[in-house]
Length: 139
Length: 410
Image 1 (cartoon, rainbow over the protein chains, first blue to last red):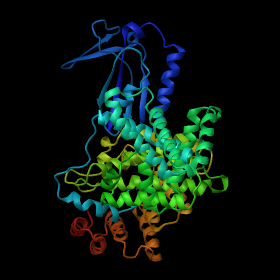
Image 2: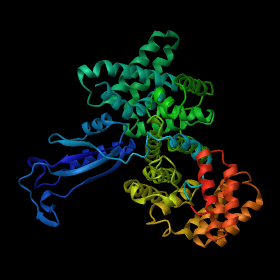
Image 3: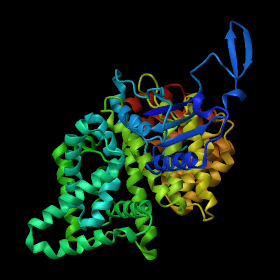
């Protein structure tokens, strides 16, 4: 299953300054660890909130508001998408993020279920697939 | 808390075991010691909290147990002394992360060693590198748990009896040994890919397990193009997991799949992994060619807009590298898409003339499909009837007979 770990912007810590070398190195080492474990699907850091915009919807109307967004505490500074066995593994990866303050949010990514458990035909599918081995898989 | 400890185990166990195999020279002993350390963690961490470096904690506990064990066996005194000496000297081995990486790669090659039968390699790889329990492996492969347990025990004994060294194969061997490792990973993937809805969730999870193993391997052997290529192939195939079965459970062939259900993130990863394989500058191997085929499909907006000429060329290359009538049949289908049904029919008839696929139901099914596109309904009907006779699958027979009835139209 996939989880997204969202790094919350910590206004006290991250606003108005770039990360230090030490912080960058620690985060780089963490990312390498996740990659080496085969769990990293994606991970990005986001530019400061000031450079972001909101697009709000009201019926057909769209309103664009440029940052900074003083009224919100829920701002994302970066994210990872991890492939993990379960929630506990996602939480363990989150625990290992080299932060000394702030919060990350851990959320499961929705995935379309490809197996319909109620169906009588699916039991025959395995054999069907074996007989089709090779043909139709890449072509 | 138990599950939190298990999550740490999943992340750390392969590295802990790899380090212990180097330390003890014995896969079986290494795994037993690691399991002991896990038991200790399950006892202590809920009270004391998870240590700051849980992998190092597990390794240290296991090493202490090993030394205690050797101390009790006076016959092994000498061994203990030499190990104790090694321990003292351990600071000189360079970057500890590099040491662990090397140990992990050695463990990969040991788990997929040719002295082991293929099913033993799979079980051992999932156990030692995937951190899966015997029960989980058994559930995934629809086999009783004791069978897997016995398989793993036997595999460890075989490795010990054959005195398989804990090392990365040298240059003369590396290509064939790496191919064996990739084969194990791809077998695990395909086992998961063949799972159906009634199955335990552990079965489809095998595809993710294989992908994870593939990514770990790509990280350990970044200069090996076929490793990246296998990762690419698995990412691209897995990207279609959600689109390949209908709501009623029947399989949907690639050309008929709803492409909006393909996983874009995974396609992007697959294409990037293939680019990495290609960037290493060697001729494409079998996995790279299959990945390139999958990538062509994955990045085409529709079946009709697919670059079928390129698909034919890739099948040509694949057939040269690993000749197989199944590849030729796929190639014939691609030719019918690239150059039209007439050309496709010529290719299929040439294949039928060789007789290699006699009795294979998809040969008449493909021929019937091409004949139907040519408007030759009577002949198409005959081919679908023939295909229906040959298949052993009831559901598929119904589909083929349905097409026969419609003069070949789907």
